[in-house]
Figure (cartoon, rainbow, N blue to C red):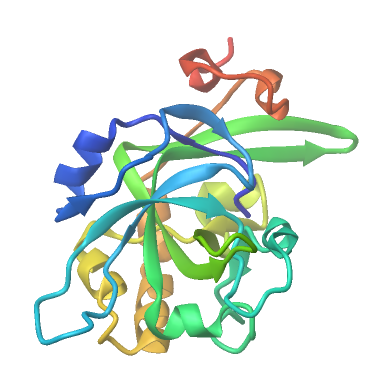
Amino acid sequence: MCGRYVMATPATDLVALFEVDEAADGLPQPNWNIPPTTTVPIVVEPRPRDDGPPVRRLEPARWGLVPAWADDVSVGSRAFNARSETAASKPMFRDGVRERRALVPADGWYEWRRLGEAKTPHYVHGDAPISFAGLYAWWKQPDGSWLLSTTILTTAATGELASIHERMPLVVAPEMRDAWLDPAEDGEAALEAVVAEAGDVAAGLTIHEVDRRVGSVREEGADLIRPVG
């Protein structure tokens, strides 16, 4: 699963890395301990309303999907992850799979290994920022403004990650990012393709144990990702 992650790379670097055309205002500051319901940066490429080319945008979004039909924003607190195996058929996520797919940039994420009653946190990361496969939705708030929200897809853990947790976030290989974002692509086929590469992508990541302080959302700072010992 993905219940806490790190996004500390500056927005200017994300614009270059993800070939973003436009960056919105209000993007969040670097954060080394992001919990659900936090505002996070996401990359989206909406279907053009006219015959013009698609515009890739970097937008701030609430982590926890709030679909258009939701009665209350609290729905999102239970939808910060979506299982890749069932997302295409679930009312909460199927429209997103069809044409509202996002990349959720991350420097890495935290995962806890449980041994008996003890839980030990680990940090999983690459040599450069990675991107989780995400979905997004717009929800009209009571005041008439629009809330953008997102969820992170997960899949079965593989390799060394499987020894820590049975699930892992679905990381999109760099060469698959364009197809994942393209709303004209068949969503289910795009999802299957990303899942098929998940094991190879995960094999290229690094894992190390970190301090238990990451378990508190009040803890912040770059020292949280340093190896213990």
